[in-house]
Image (cartoon, rainbow, N blue to C red):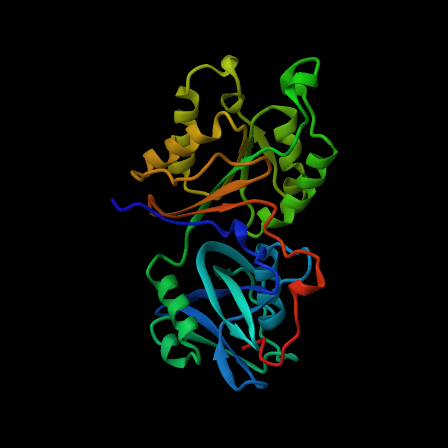
Length: 326
């Protein structure tokens, strides 16, 4: 079986000085004869394109994609796999746009607005001929090369919890430090971009606290699994292998929060269960996460994220341009 496509949108929103950063998606739904995608028309440019928009200062690219799609179409979405990035000149500036597969998550009706005067649902196979820009057609081709609907398995490393060396007491009781607590709050809406997931956490206080804001936001509950504890006391990886098997076999959106020591083992075990090679890359930083996108027992893509994927607050990050929206 071929290895999954691996994307690293962790750099989304952090371009070199002068780059315009934006995000959007291929908005899709199940139609009468397969998958339909949403194309938007902008009267200002008289073009048909995909929904997207510029990142606000300090905004994570995931949040930008969800916000901009909702603003331009009126439809809330659940993000799937990262489709890649387009890069082009916009009024003399380089514009970088990250895109995701974006499943329609509600039945809201389109209402014309200041930016978009029309929207049409078009069968995915017919959509390329309707698009004004070749770069959009290439993104759509990337979308149609894989299944539209995937199930996320999110592997999250807990946020910062100070140092083991300065902590006195049971390591499982070590709490998040102030920075880690702030990161847990920032994580919640970003993880929610992938929908409402079953949450499984190491019983360590720092892991449970990392997912608590997401649990509250998503309206779900968290369960703990002792097999996700770190250190020699957790024993061999047999518990992680069993957990990996259950997660894959249950085929439901799942978020797992654990430790730097055991997440690579769990990642490898889940990929092995899916008959795929684990994605390459360094160990996750604290408060960083993998999203494994699975369809019918196959690993379709693996996307890596962290909290740094936000537009810097410098005025140079977002520059108005009469051609920017193109």
